[in-house]
Length: 263
Image 1 (tube, one colour):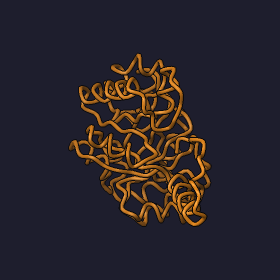
Image 2: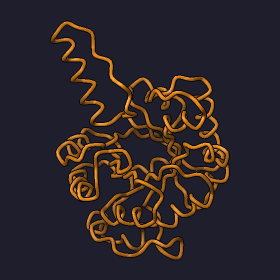
Image 3: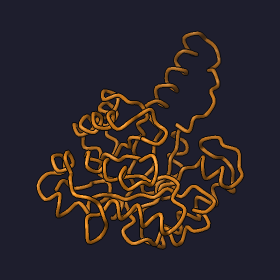
Image 4: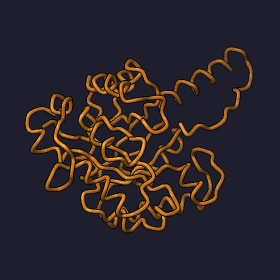
């Protein structure tokens, strides 16, 4: 089976940089994946993407060495299984609140006897290659998002869930859970301390830690803090920022301020 290079890097304690895909477009997915990112994540939760789009975008990503990840809309086993069957090499599961929910996500990623994933890797076996059925349990990354009040309270039990490979922090939802105003890349000191608390719990449990950012400044910040995987914005965010900057330069005006979308 094709190696999950990003998961292997995390297990070695190494760092990776990825990009978020929020647009239902095969060309932009292929273009971003071929820039050299370690991984790219198709966002089915908040992105403008549905399953038929995913089925076209994953083969486009496969023209690159980037590991294909998918953030599923919710912690629903059938949704997790379906994106894995389409060829995702890992899932990011939002709003995981406790050990039971983490166990549910892990079980959906693993074939018996380690879980309850149903067998039918219709495209996954084509992408993964020979040995998929035997090796998928070891190569597929199960990643839980800790971003709610309950998730914060239960961080120790979540990160110690057997079979969980990593935690991914959503800064905006984490801010909401803490009663802080949302600003995308959160600047509050108490937010940073909570992020470090979750990071420490992951280190103690021996699993990888990742976080979402929408700027180079915060990507560099979290890499310096030792995060294993950090998102350097999204294709839509890069497009908007560059277009806004160059439009303002062409007109000789100040760049128009925009409401944060988290991307």
